[in-house]
Amino acid sequence: MTTNTTLLARRSAAVARGVATAFPVFAGKAEGAEIWDVEGRRYIDFAAGIAVLNTGHRHPKVIAAAKQQLDAYTHTAFQVLPYEPYVALCERLNALAPFSGEAKSLLFSTGAEAVENAIKIAKAATGRPGIIAFAGSFHGRTAMTMALTGKVAPYKHKFGLSPAGVFHVPFPATPLDVDVSDALRALQLLFRADIAPSDVAAIIIEPVQGEGGFWPAPTELLAELRKICDTHGIVLIADEVQTGFARTGKMFGIEHSGIEPDIITVAKALGGGFPLSGVIGRAAIMDAAEPGGLGGTYAGNPVACAAALAVLDIIKDEGLVARANEIGATMHAALERMSQRNDAVPMASIRGPGAMVAFDIVTRRGTNTPDADTTKRVVQAALGHGLVLLSCGVFGNTIRLLCPLTISDAQLKEGLDLLERALVSANA
Image 1: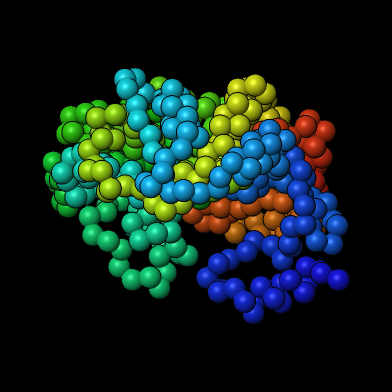
Image 2: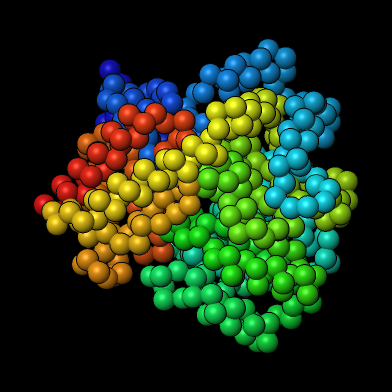
């Protein structure tokens, strides 16, 4: 009989240890907001494959679209023989672009690929070498995106010096005691001390930091970045890999600010469980690269494109943008109530737009002192109760809630009840 224990032993023997796994539990099947492991135990999913499954596990329309495409063809390489699903998806993404004017898109397979190519496009458009990112950010694990990521451990540890030309400034976040004025002062200091604005190709920012702890980028900061980019001819990139496609209660997270970026990167929820990513940008910028300079063998796979077209239909037809806000309101109310319990672990800074919600575990109520050890206990306790839950944050003390947007009210309540049990049992 296949068990979690036997599979874990096989994994340890066969898989390089650099790929971490949060839990020693192997998936057997999944549907909607539920997962069953190989031993038949059921879990409510508050991770959604790290915000990939906004439309839930195996949504019938996604599966039907993928099966239909499988019956036609699975691969030609878009650079060899193009196909309609790629073009149709780019048309749909261009229509959704959160900026005015003509847009163009191109497709890849992973979020890191999308970010890497957005940087390439910005450099081609400006003829400049420098990139500015933010501390606490996560943009990927390739050489360039690892350099952009504002966190050393575990993403840069043992991998040597990052590619040159990438600079970081502080990101406004309560635990770091950094506000917007601090971030902007650091940016101006960077311009005086390390790189002239005329040498900067792009500034890249997550509308809501993901791995950094679900801290929304303040509108004041985004507005100032837009002004700086306009003044100096810098491309403003919004990394929407985790925030895109209804997760934050808008189609894209940047839309909460009213600020228009020049390029956005998308992935995760776009493919509905299939590997797919993209770059959407202003047409003049997107056309800066020469033919052949962009692409990839599997980039924009036709099966993934068909699934993504179904995802966009589901978001519209099932009202998932509004549903994200309903879920978020329910989560915020439940967390506020939980935070008042004296028998639960101390909580702080409940935050997040739409259904991208988080809170911190701290050592004592009324403080922001992080407690990473207790956070780990909460996550493990949740799994024991039947809830898949993830942590994140610069100090490892943030609990993030990322349930599918198609979750039922009953399953959402069940998941929150399980979370509350975990917060209490971890305090015992």
